[in-house]
Length: 142
Image (cartoon, rainbow, N blue to C red):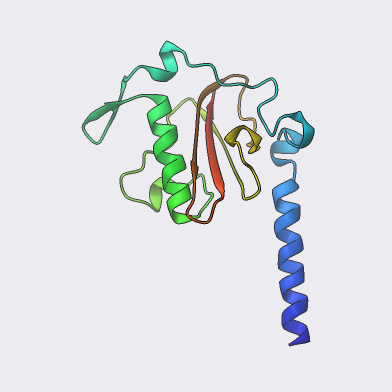
């Protein structure tokens, strides 16, 4: 029983450390910086909202693809860049774009959820709340 409690404590501490880790060599924005959005706010553009991508026979935008990925992560509770290989009907990360993903169980606003900074400009920003209340956020970068 004591060993089980020690293991639970270690796993819990690891989860906290991973959530607070600076991904991509310190390029995750969090804490008092606005939870990953300070200086990297998403501003819809023609490029991000135009339905120019074909996915399963329909035209979709970058924003649509980011939302599908966020919805799948929230539904499965799995924060993973490889979500397209795990959930049917979810697009892969579009070629030429980086993806930043994040999850927070204590956030009230999706902008409070930090993601990796995988480029210099946010091209799409989507989020979804899971059944357990966690917010999953997906951003495409260029």
